[in-house]
Image (tube, rainbow, N blue to C red):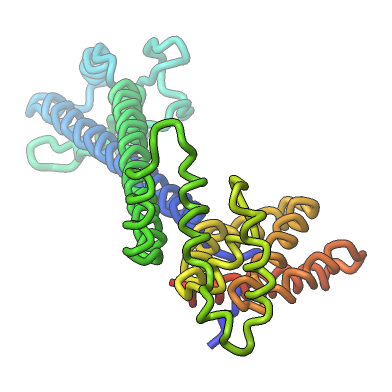
Length: 361
């Protein structure tokens, strides 16, 4: 089943980690804002309770049996209540109208009541009773500025909590992502090493130990490759005309440090050479799909064409004809003016490369 995806919506591990990191920070910010909102509501509730308690106390002072709605006594009690800096205004109301009232001006000094509220004060109301008869009400207003210092302190505390939590979240996520990435690299490296047969590794170790000091290990490898070339019995086998041509060149290539002729002869005689090539291909192009997507998004068509050229040359070594054709078509489309064709060609090449890498896993 073919995988269908959009080039611009491809989810990479880096983008997934970024989304998780941003989501965690957003949740921490929401928690901090919620805590600040709760603190503000609690502070306002405390102000309301304080205003009600003060109103009850004033109504108890004014509700003496001998009191017969005397303005002088009411003014004295109100002025005494205004000595408290937390109180913004006090108002004594009777059925006939306002008996006495004071509020604070912009200099926070008591002035006569004029029905102007410059502060967003919290009000507390208590009925005024004399000998059990309701004769009016007492209203006390408490300004929220008395709790502004506590609110500011709570806001700073929540801000520092958010900063520290964000730093811990970022550090923890970075450690997890690094460990996961390192574990994935180790698994990929182990898979690449497992694709090489054990006898090849043992032969390489034997060559390294048997080589004298100062000698090049490549030369001993060439000697082994020369010894692994077809013998006379193999030459008599029909259908090996190409091998006979290579064997004729072996004496001339024996002294070279790196010989394509010897390498080609070795690959023809050993089936596990394809597994080595597949492991190298998987190791080299493991991150190529994401790299191609990023290069196309950045508009770097030159680098994308170079990568396509490498894929076009390397894919036939595995028999990946579709990938080779897709890489060639991608290079042709990138050199053309049609942007839609180039996008489709890049997507097709990425899809073909993903299928090859999946099959090699």
